[in-house]
Figure (cartoon, rainbow, N blue to C red):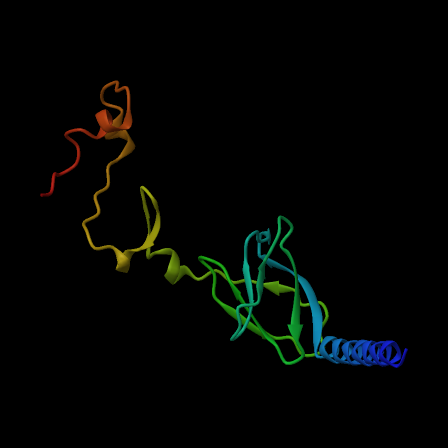
Length: 154
């Protein structure tokens, strides 16, 4: 009988500490929401990260994001072709951001057959062909259209 009472008291004590610790932990973080847009409207897929952590989110179809952050958090907003913005959360529960285009970055992007790379990261040569040159004769596939139009490197 005493063993049963002791186990019950121990269980109740553990539950009490669990409730106290969880309420303390939740008091140290808060929810932040908002939208990210540019001059033309909402931006889809903007990377929203808590600076110095791996905690983050991306914006949805309406430019909306929601994130649990520490009280003293700084949010970092990143999007290709736009300047990175760092904003302290402070007492804000809603943080709306307007991104500004970064024209320097747009000039340095090269589209390749398997993705996008920066011009500085390319190790080979880049060749361009005008669309008019591809339509000079009928071809059954892209390889036939390019044959004889590109320099061959060994």
